[in-house]
Image (cartoon, rainbow over all chains, first blue to last red; front, side):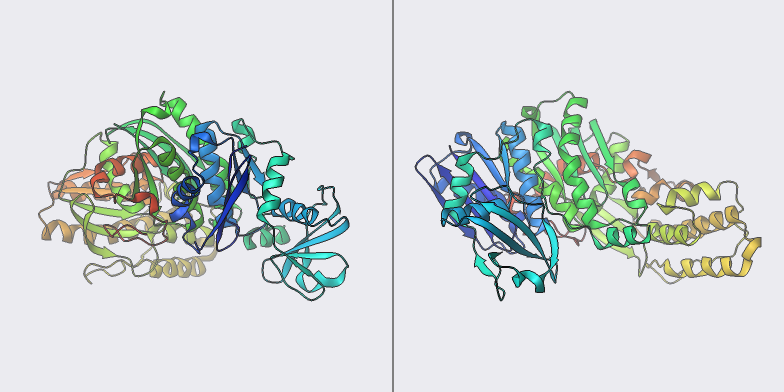
Length: 210
Length: 336
């Protein structure tokens, strides 16, 4: 299966193409210029993989957690491209990607994943590997991240936490496993969104007041 | 040629199809006003979220309404600034995907410039130069002399609040609701515009606007009048003060330039007392006044498409590398 994946959840952009024989990934130092470079990144990835957009069987986009601006730019771009070209689109969460990374490392049993968000908070999920199903993310204080055993910090170092970098091999496997059914119709494509949205300060204040 | 326009600079998602820059085939707006009303203003994070939800369904609706297919689109025009960065990026990313997939040019459009083109679009005409442009909205208060496509000489701008901002703040203070412009106009209907003596800020001080003093003056009247306050008279007096402030500077420009065409644009151009004042002024100076329709006053993608059509030659060849920017002066270079 030929695919193009974009992860714009961080300052640098991660992109990956893959087919039946392997994958090719690249990190772009986009900083705040991701939206300016998005077409060039896609063109470069396809060119390096010797693929044309028309050849792709699947588009894949990271759904977070991470920079909501970057995630939305990638989602807006790939959702539109998927709709126009009638290509299936799948959203990949960093939690799923990270759990698959642990499976690839032959880790099994109960694990906890934490990923920093806001200034002092982190998202936390629990899973029982090799099953990739996980609990709903909850917001915890970052200082409590290392309080439990078998805790892995996604792109995050903290005392008591094992740092974990989601890996390209695991992403390739995850996409090819087809765990998530891709969106094909417009209503389905509209559900491919950044998933881990923390309410804005204005919304939190409004909720408190009411 | 059919231009697809996309606008998402604030709290309205809009998609339009315009033929040859003058004929609106479809212009749809998905307003978030009800969502932001509870917060008393636009929350950028919420706006970004809602733009992403709305833009593709709106695009499809606009295509259906215009009876167009994607292969009919000759170019994409999109607001690249000024505005709220998060919301702008949703429209820009969508436009880039469209241009990339359809292999048509993308024209990044300055939102404020496009507001002026809206008045010509409302008349079904292409922009004719020179003209005086008065842009009055929630974030802008500019008087410009326009000599060609993307060629502007700024004559006056505000030192502080824009008129829409003034109306919003006053409406909030008076508990009238949001957005301020329409509720102040409605409340002021039948009111005596001479009842309350409000200042004409910067009168006689050259090409400069200022509106924050008016807000303070209104608050002082509210405090002094207490239960005697006549809300209709206060709103009518406020609108008169705003209209008079603009009229003085516009009259100066009509006297000092050769322009005999006056274009008013932006959300506050929907304000009836201001429209009437500008018409009187234009008549007195034998100038033509072009006003947008109410639909074209507020943020809309039809004006983006029309402006993109008439400024396509000025768009950079590598426009797909343009970024969205919160600040972008009229006539200024594109942002990379």
